[in-house]
Image 1 (tube, rainbow, N blue to C red):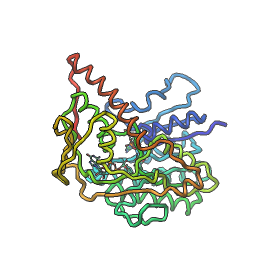
Image 2 (tube, helix red, strand yellow):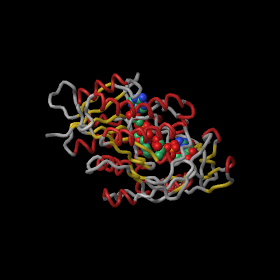
Image 3 (cartoon, protein in one colour):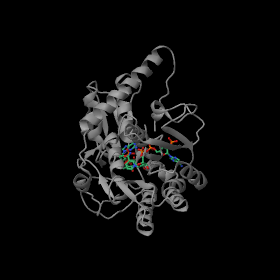
Image 4 (spheres, rainbow, N blue to C red):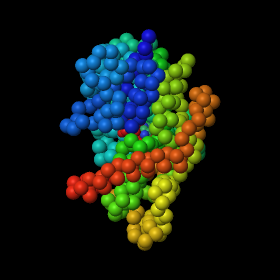
Length: 361
Ligand code: NDP
Ligand code: GDR
């Protein structure tokens, strides 16, 4: 029997990698996408199957994490063996602008899926994965952070995810459901959203290299993160649902870099050497010709910042056989390579007289 998986957030970075991974494993993959006024399926277009074809193994449904009725309907129809709850308003800075919506989709959204499983009597059939986050550690209480490290969330996003974390634990304990949290540290890829810092850097530097953009504006250059590759991390999401008992796991590389280190690494891939001057709000980066190509803009500072995160993946290594395959340098190189290709296309358009849009966020 083919296994059936349901992925919320299938149009996102992880959703796309996970869908591809599960299809390769022979799963029938269902995904929930929300209605948008433009197509929002760029990341999964290569997996698309015409709805008029029979025996499809990749099927999309309209739904929303804020709409219980859609979630119950889809789960009833799909009868999934595994549910991966990846959908979320996932941008930490945006969560300060939209705290209520973030709580609704990220905290109550998880509850709605768990309740749907319970209401439909699927507690023993549908295994549940919750996309938990290193942001739970926020103002860190211990370094490196592991499964037992106390949480101290520092944003509406992290507080919403804290609820989702504990409601997952509670449904596991209260109803005997196979429900687990993957506490994933930052993971990136060429399809990372353009407003997360890594992709913002690789995209902007590639555009600067080709003369499509003058300067990259960033916030806190001293923030440190434990960055891995999304492709590696989705495999762990699947493995967590293949165990005898549901447990929560930290997934991280155990290596930490600053935002400035990331800029330097991306610049190096492009053959740009940056000379740094100043600090804090006055920090600037100059290229060999003395042109300012990186500048701090306080608009990107967060009301409460998470300064440093470093994961200890020992439990995942021991129990899941976790070894991250992609190094930091390889991750940066892949992201730069893909953004350079996209910038070359934009450059071609520009030279042919078409205007390309330079959106700073
Ligand atoms: P993305 O932001 O790339 O994707 C989020 C997905 O959720 C998109 O498909 C988005 O749809 C969907 N979504 C957002 N709001 C709703 C809603 N109300 N109803 C239905 N769908 C919705 O995130 P990632 O792929 O990077 O992350 C996946 C999950 O893992 C998220 O929950 C994130 O918080 C968590 N996480 C991510 C980490 C990372 O470093 N990437 C680390 C730790 C946790 P649309 O495409 O229409 O916007
Ligand atoms: P994060 O990722 O907040 O860790 O959340 P992000 O890439 O947004 O920020 C990382 C760090 O870089 C600093 N920073 C900037 N960030 C952005 N976005 N834009 C900037 O210009 C900028 N300049 C500096 C930030 O202040 C921060 O310290 C991601 C998301 O994927 C979450 O959903 C996930 O839960 C966590 O990772 C783990």
